[in-house]
Image (tube, rainbow, N blue to C red; front, top):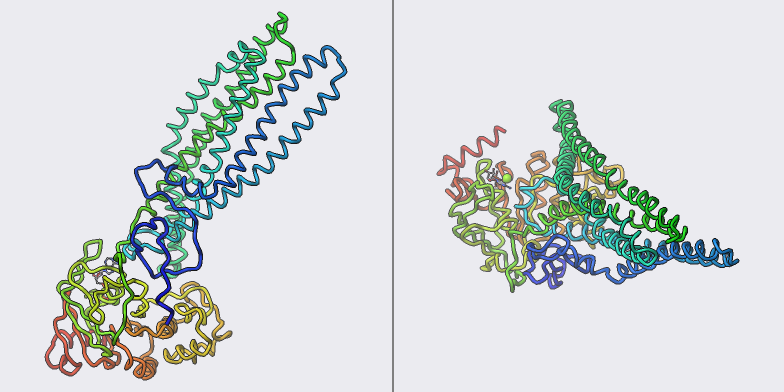
Length: 611
Ligand SMILES: Nc1ncnc2c1ncn2[C@@H]1O[C@H](COP(=O)(O)OP(=O)(O)O)[C@@H](O)[C@H]1O
Ligand SMILES: [Mg+2]
């Protein structure tokens, strides 16, 4: 068994809160910063710590970009001097001017390139951090969260939303730098001619008002677009995962239509977005041109009147172009900002979700001495309101094998999920060797209790790796021994690549019974002192099942086991049977005793034998 003394990793973004789940241990250190937990803060302030963790590179990038832009603003001013002084008066200094301007231009270019390199580095580091934060958090959340959400929504959030937050949070500062440069450029304009500078700037307030208006109009549509993209992702996800169901009911066309509908809704949102953009962008783009004509008109008069050098007109043209960029980008910034805000809020929806199942502060590792289990007065209701257990009490002695029998939906699987704390009990308590499982670390609990589920999920990796999933350092001999015990070794050997055969997504290339046997081997390899088999052999042939149980008998003798089963052959493994009905144990005893005394038991058995 893996060492349980290893410290569990801290939760993804609230290190100061009690560790909610110890099941995940990893050598990956994770992002060095976390999103602020204070949900009353503005969205960008919550993201700030993540960007802040890259501040060294960030400030180098932004600083260099500032230097580059300052160098760029020097050029028109130098041009002004060159024309008014050296060109018009033929001083012969023109070559020197050209060399100077070239040097400044080259320096501006080089610093520009280097600054971009750093800014992109920050951008992609921030993206990687956000991605890790979300995935880490997802792995910390409880089963109840996954009962509620659609995986398509999650995938979409993790991708497009991260991207839009990343873009905004790294490029917004760059645009702000550009705007600062606008101020410097305006300073130069003032120094050349204050009246002309003011005239040139007349259009800018209008530009600002237009930008503001645009922001109000664009915001709702960008939100709708994101939501509809997530809907498409959900449908695609369901169709890929559920393709066998779709095909077996010949519903391809209906599904294609469903997707087409969703795609059309996305298209509508995008077209609406493009339309609004088309209506508003020309204003934002062309207002500065109006400034140019004003400069030509009034500046021209001043030049004709002899109050201004001709070089000034050229310099003003260049400066207005420079001013235009930040103002145009400010509009873009506004749009990116809306998108980023919508995306960030959707990301926070996940990150603000807390696991229902918590480790108590001061939780200790569960110590197994035999593995006796007590359920005492357990009540349990799912979040959707379905009441499953009411006053459920049962005892399983150390080393005993007990079967739980009950109708479908009577709560048998829920009992298994409560024992591993996939969910927490509503009332009452569950004790292992006298210790309330609510007091122990989740990691030690889940290591002690091995559950084999009826719907075994296999990863798209080799059979060997699937079996070794809970003990990646297991030797080949150990893996083979576990496979033998689960009666899987023979069929695995017959596969084209034996243990190295990669099973498809969810192991679909294998039969249900074969997958169940691999799942049993996977749990046996971890060698848990308490074993729960939840309909774990339901898809396995009766005679193969008998072989498995013959092999399991020896293994089960060493541990406490709960088998959830319908078949008499499986139930026969148990020394005692509990009959579950109406949320509690209504009868218990040996198979023979129950046959004689419990009509319900006979009825359940008869039904399942029929099936
Ligand atoms: N994740 C869930 N969320 C809400 N209700 C659930 C969930 N899982 C099971 N249920 C409901 O709880 C009841 C017991 O389910 P379960 O324990 O799986 O029964 P069994 O294993 O005996 O067939 C059923 O009515 C089922 O519909
Ligand atoms: Mg079940």
